[in-house]
Image (cartoon, rainbow, N blue to C red):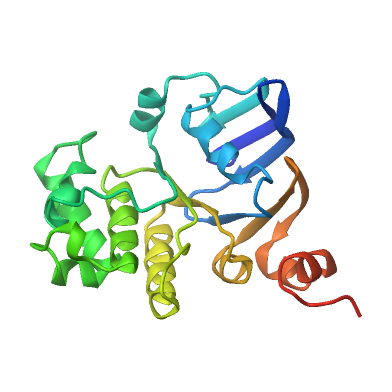
Length: 239
């Protein structure tokens, strides 16, 4: 049984279907990539899992519990964390305070200490910047902070929306190394990414969405060689 199980999910906005018949699985400690063009429904799927939008049909099960229509705050307490697009850090707060704010669900001092150490293992640069205000960090460092703050609640599932968007290319490998470290600790990572090549390299399993439907899924490295993925997303023309 997978940690996250989604079956036949549909989401509609103003009568228009954003997702249709979506099924997905994510296991503990795995990285699952959601790839597709803008408007394919990737971010909507994360919002549905988080309880921020209500599905019209289908089920979302997490740790064998039906969370389809649970309130967002209840879903967080069950162990799902969502890092939305846009590096929404607290600019005037220090790196340390940003991280500690991420631990509001579980304020046990021992757990906080352990999770801070895990954050520094995943993103060593944050430890170097610990007393700096978040506003003084580069865009890539702010993204590291946003991801680490999401992990500070000790989630069993961490969802990341466009972690490499607008990031200097030199920092993207560090961000993905941190994501790999988080997954290696046993946390499942559900990754939405426009950078399809990077996402497929990092993921264990990938799902390709087009106009709200899953059109391909399988081992991520297999999908790198799929003609549809190569032509539509990697800029490699069909032979």
